[in-house]
Amino acid sequence: MPVVAASPVRFLAIALALAACAPVPAAREAVAADTSAVMDVADDALALTATWPVGVTAADWTDPTRATPANGDVAGHPGRHLPSQIWYPAAGAAGGAVTDNAPSAAGVFPLLLFVHGFSGTPSVYSGICQRLAALGYVVVAADFPLTSLLTDGGPSDWHAEMEQGDLAFLADQALGANVPAPLTGHLDVAAGYAVVGHSTGGTVALLAAYRPDGHDSRVRAVVDLSGDSCFFDAAFFATRAVPLLAVGATRDLLVPAANNPARAFALASAPAVLVTLRGGTHLHTTDLTIADPTDSTPTGLDDPLAQTMAAWGKAAACRPIPPPGAEPLLDNDTQRDLIALSTRAFLDAYVKGAPTGLQQLLAKPDARLEIQAK
Image 1 (tube, one colour):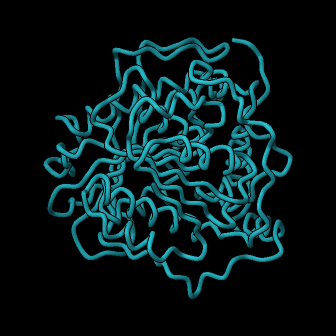
Image 2: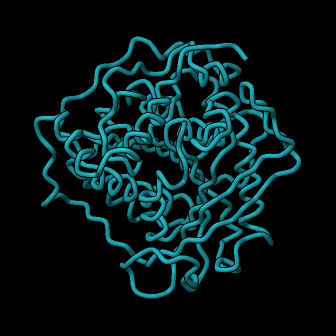
């Protein structure tokens, strides 16, 4: 494997290390020091109201039919190990703590597969996953081979395209007989599944939608949260029409919105929705409360992820790098609330067949959001 420049989203590994070593107040001070103002959210139009309490359970799944490549000096593995956390609507009144192995709420719920970013883990995205479960989705989030922080030999963006196959396998398990006990009989098999991914995971979500080979017809919709996509050619987005929500952030220093999520929206066939978070950052989609690193370089041609995805594009749109916005910074909780609300409105429309929430969002968008639809 050639040695190339580090991926910009490799800074998530640094962020995780900082979050583990520094007390929470110090991390919050680091964010505050990065901006002159934090957006006031007291009177904004959108507010996140949970419908269900949330249960969480775990599954330890391995696909024995697909091998994991070597990672530098670490030998490959004969299977794809995908330990997963699963958040779901639980029985009882909304609110309160997330409960291990709680009884599921009555009824059936759509399956949502969440794909973490480079050097991420499901626990780093627990805030987003819990919010989506409280709004009526069963959220399966795996530690994906190689891109996970827990990877032997360190995380890598090489072979991230294999995660599209992992998604199909995870759907087989969750929608089949291997679903954990609390969810037996509570997943809507007929609804297929949706894919939500952040950063490298957003790139994988786009593969699930548009990759010309190996498409899973059960994919009903995809949500790209600041996914790297500037290296995909325009023809990549013309392979089929899968409902797409692309979410970008004006102050994202790692995956600029203008040539990544906004470009994906522009090139995608309808139906597609673009949500731009005014004052949003890259890392505030995660549970981390630290600012994006200012010494990073967004994805370019030499990046491992761009080279991994080179079959579908040559990174022609990755340069020049668009400048970030100067809007007041969204705080971590607010950014995740806005993402969850936008994602719920979109998925309700295209997975549940309930478009009212999306229609309302488009008719009267929140001041912190810029929204386009086609």
